[in-house]
Length: 79
Image 1 (cartoon, one colour):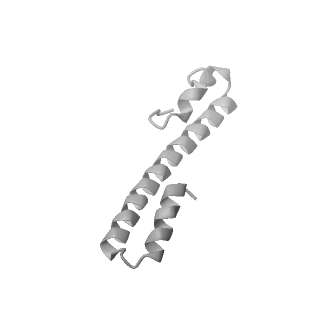
Image 2 (tube, rainbow, N blue to C red):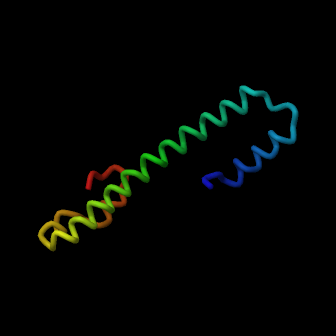
């Protein structure tokens, strides 16, 4: 689900220890939310690139030549 083993361990430890403050939990949650939001944006770009690649395939080989397939998996590419 997007959590590393280290993150899961930390979450379990926070749950078991009464020392975890709300500010600590909130800070970690906000960090994870930012990370998730970035992953969502990256996935949206990859999805758009793949959709554009499929459209180029449907339009024929001339359109397809505009795309380097590997570039479409680069989140910075604007395929």
